[in-house]
Image (tube, rainbow, N blue to C red; front, top):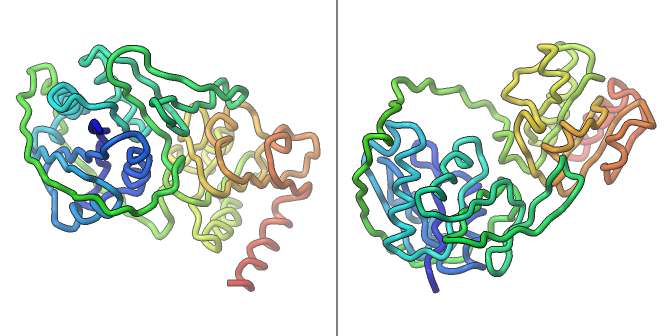
Amino acid sequence: MSDVLVLVEQVDGEVKKVTLELLTLARTLGTPAAVWAGPGFTPEAKARLAEYGAEKIYVAASGDLVDHVVAPKAELLAKLVTEKSAAGVLIAATAEGKEIAWLAIKTDSGVITDAVGVGEGFVADQSIFGGGINVHSRVRKGTPIIAVRPNSTAPVPSAGAGAEEEVTVALSDAAKAARVVERVKQEKGARPELTEAAIVVSGGRGVGSAENFAVIEELADALGAAVGASRAATDAGWYPHQFQVGQTGKTVSPQLYIAAGISGAIQHRAGMQTAKTIVAINKDPEAPIFELADYGVVGDLHQVVPQLTEEIKKRK
C-alpha cells in the first residue's frame, strides 16, 4: 500500500498525543509513514511512533525546518508527496497545522480542514456551519491533504516496523523569508493541554467574575481536565484568551465537555459540538446549550459545580 504521511507534532522530542491519533487513523488508509521535521529525533521518539503503527519514519533533521515559519515544513511534505507517491497526508488541525496544509498548492491537490474522521477513499467527515450540518467531503484532485481535529480518533497501539530514513530538502528563498527570532517557553501546569484533553470544563458569562473561575478550575482539577472559557468570559478579562473555546478560539473534541454558565451561542458551539458527551449547567432552562447537551442541569452553577466537585472527590 502507498504511504500515508503523518506530520509529527512534538515538543522537545516528546511526541504529542494527536500524532498517535493520526497514525491510528493512517493505518486504516494505507501504510503509516511518520514525518519528523527538525532536530531532536531520539530513540524514544522512534519507539513511540513505531508503537502506534509507523511502518516508516522520514527524518529531516535540518534546523532550518523549525527556524522559519510554517513554509519549510510544507515544502518538506510536498517533496515527500512527490517522491514517495503518497496516498495522502494527515496533519493535526492546529493553528500551525492548518497553515501547513496549504502545501496542497505546491502539489496541485485538494485540501480539507477540521475533519473529525476519515474513512475509506479518504472521505472526510466534517461538522460545518457552527455544527448545524454534518458532511462527507472528498478531494477530487491530486493527493488528499487533510487536517484532522485532535481527539477525533482514539489512539490505539499497533506495532509498526519504524524503519528510519533520512531525508533532506532544499528550501526555497520564499520559505526562509520569515525567521523565528525568539522562543519563550510557557510554564506547563498540571492540567492537560486544552485541544488534547479528554475532559474539558468551560465557564462562561454565568461565572460572573475572574475570581469565580476558581470553581471551574477546582472541578477541572478534580476530573484531571483542561479549563476552557467562552468568548464572553475571555472578552470580559475573566480568563486568558488562549483558553477560549469557539469559532474564533480553539476547537476541542474531548470525551467529556462540561459547559457551566454558557448560553450556547453558535460561536461557542462551533468549537465544542463534536465532543462525545456534553453536560450543560445553566440556570436558564431555555439556554440554547441544552439543545446540544446529552445531560443538562438547570441550576445556579455556583451551587451545582461545588457540589459536583465535592462528590467527585469523595469517589476518587
